[in-house]
Length: 318
Figure 1 (tube, rainbow, N blue to C red):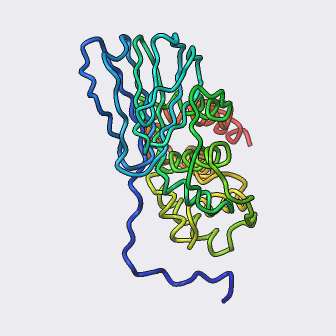
Figure 2 (figure 1 turned 30 degrees about the horizontal axis):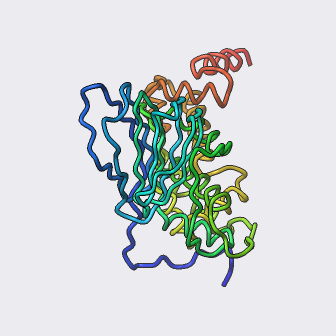
């Protein structure tokens, strides 16, 4: 088959995995805290704050096989923090900021915090981890080692990167969260997975037809509401394989590529139309003008209004 030609689409109906999402839960002294905290069966990021701690220990449950990754954002004294797995109390010490726990939901983890706390919890389904491990060349990972109060610099850093977006109206798109889950998943596999073999993987990029198809889909979904799994399926690849191959071909992740495309599209509208900045923001896939201005300044170095004035002045003199 000509590698430039796209194969015929599979007509069999397929469903995407449940979309990832973020939550920010702020308890107060009067909040009723359930004894069981059930996570959804998808990749989720939950920030949980409390000014008063928990009256009793809570059990964390998942409807699907998954890992629970928890990161404390503030210190807790050893006397005010306890963790159980499989009904066994795990020895703990002082909780320092950005220390990580990695626990399999199968062990029915329980925790208690007797004073104010601020945590970020990731629920990471094992199915997604299996797909990443397969693509990395490890095969299926059957077990993950237990880690409590681990000084994991990678988890700490990626948590710091996502933290400013939790609880905001312009939360990360599902495409960005898909990409984030791949980064976290690859680290969990290599750092905590009980691996059976050495990784062997291909480092090639996308075929020409796959590059065209991926670009088309991203152009059509500028708001980023498309799932990474949907684009990967259109290219006939696993999610992890597609994400890695896309970055090899384009030099950026799908989310980074889409953000740059939004900015390029906004520049085109600012130079070729008299549309207002709020109209341009919406047309370019941003939730509002504030998000547009923030992203534009990050990538270009100046605000969109200033960039437009500079462009207009420069070309009026030409």
